[in-house]
Image 1 (cartoon, rainbow, N blue to C red):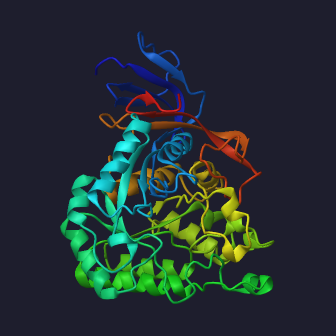
Image 2 (tube, rainbow, N blue to C red):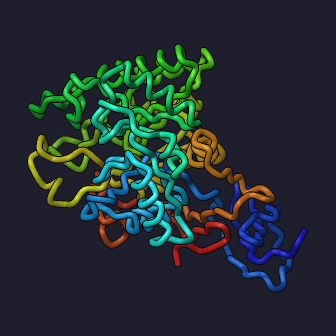
Image 3 (spheres, one colour):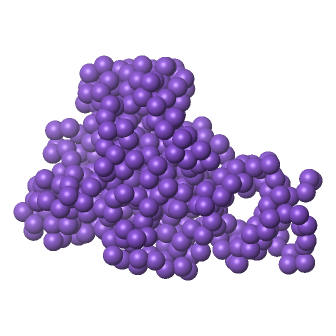
Length: 424
């Protein structure tokens, strides 16, 4: 083994103290910690027992650039990702112009390279249809060649099932999965509030869980009939989990994600007409939270993703029905979801799998198990460090989160990509 250039000493990896040895932007080895071991000439990082994780992948992010830079831009979004422990960001296509052409894809990648040449790295998700209008398919072959790793119509799901079928077939021919926002377009789309007791109490029109499940069923049936993969975005309710479980039991190529806010908040977060908790699909019930946590632990929900959706303060400071849907999540996701590990609801390996190994496998991104030869992409995380969620601690331009002003436990203390410090 060649001599290490960088050594992370006394980190905690899957519950055991380890030393991570790195050189040339790659992992040389991960050894049991030995306080007597000497590495002359290497740069030493004393981890002090911090948790060692592979850098995370976020498969569902709205970076807003081009066109909505007042909400977020690529530079600020990637900085938030870096401090949140996320080294690879898959960005949605609802920009202006829409990312429905190879030239837009190339522009996004070029802007990201200039803003953060050493990462975090952007992996664009191309628009499934031109202009996200659901009328004509986008040129997926050209966009895949330009760098799109998946395709989605994002928050404007394709209502035309024949067109969606053709989109699935086209995407499969270019070797890219389709990510679908499952929402029936006729059941009060974008309500941002679950239909139930809380919506009745507030006098708000809500969206029922069936709006999501109708599209989940459609997508699963098409995946089965065509023999192609489908990835279901931001699953929010028990009934969707039940359909996903049945699909997986049949061996179908169906994968799914949920988001931190669906695991830690319920519809009651909207009480007081709190627009920070207005999100699409809406926050659901305690029973849904329980079902999603169980599905995540069992692997029925394959990955975690933020659905980071930043908005300017003035856009959220309006009447509930007029506010846009979305929660800012890049800064808070790791600390928030680590609570599942602390509570014994996920093992550390399951946490890593949901945040890194599974998204890498689904979307063809670089694997990193911190094994010899893997990229030196790692995070040190102090699970006991406390911080207050707010503009002083967050790196996103936007602070539209129900966590605003609350104390979170857990903070990234170091983040390296290919052996380079991306927090410096």
